[in-house]
Length: 247
Image 1 (tube, helix red, strand yellow):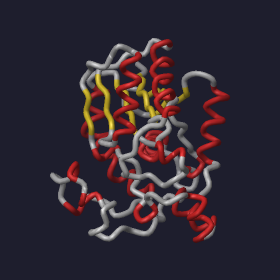
Image 2 (tube, rainbow, N blue to C red):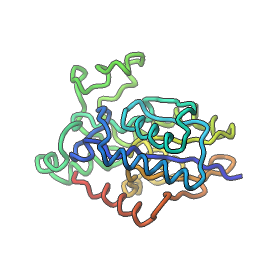
Image 3 (cartoon, one colour):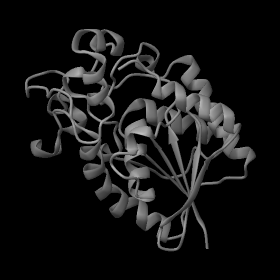
Image 4 (cartoon, rainbow, N blue to C red):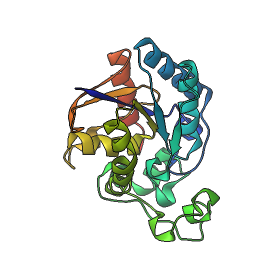
């Protein structure tokens, strides 16, 4: 039996538009992002997908994307689980900075390493910085040691996998149809795990905004295949645009 898991990166956010490092900063969708999320719901509906549960991060761009897509499908009533472990990668002291300007200051190669390498994190925030999650009330119930001051993709894999095993796997094993609305790097982290992508190859995986990614899994939840819904050329072009972002 084939199990289908659907992953949906949020639609374009305001800081995607402004080419800024976003991370855990809670920014809204743009009008384009709203349209992308709505179109994602339409693609899912036309392809005959239904869901029993949706998992999102605790950031509004993922939450809003899930709400818009489910509303198109008339599934806004299904149970929702939100968790910080599905958040975007925390970009540390880069959060809020323009990618082109940061590359001009620090060098394109250095910023590319911070942005896309597997195990090199950007400069960390100090605890008193307003951008540190310790100063955000939504994380107030968590122990300080689990809240990142910066992250590389390896860190995202490590903090995402407990959520996958404790929440998503039981849903999928229980026969529930699962939609995950999250972020470029939390989805990359999950795909690295599912496809066993080597560390030196994960840099080449780019997740476009607002296009549903259907992942097929076997009974043991091992990866069988994956595909984007809709126009494959459009999805490839959108992924290339993510790869081409400065910095």
